[in-house]
Length: 123
Image (cartoon, rainbow, N blue to C red):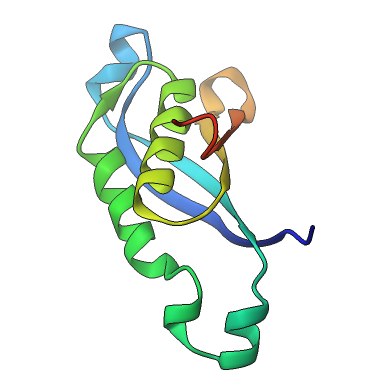
């Protein structure tokens, strides 16, 4: 079976994140990479019509609004919540999310998690 994807790469969102009290004083920027596993994009590729595909623009706005309005302790939770949101808002069968948090104070570019969820798992 063919599996095409739509990917959203480098979506930056600000939120309160972290377990340490000093981390939670200010919002931090998270960088998100999201992969929507669509099955096949043949229909939209042939028709060139938005209604034949996943409209990622409103999804990006929902994800940004959802994350920025909440506070989290763990980036794992951010990834899990985004997976849940994508599955509830779209017809994709599976979604993969990568969440990166910059930690320059530790001399790191980023730490992160990658998580996936499928519609079957979400029942």
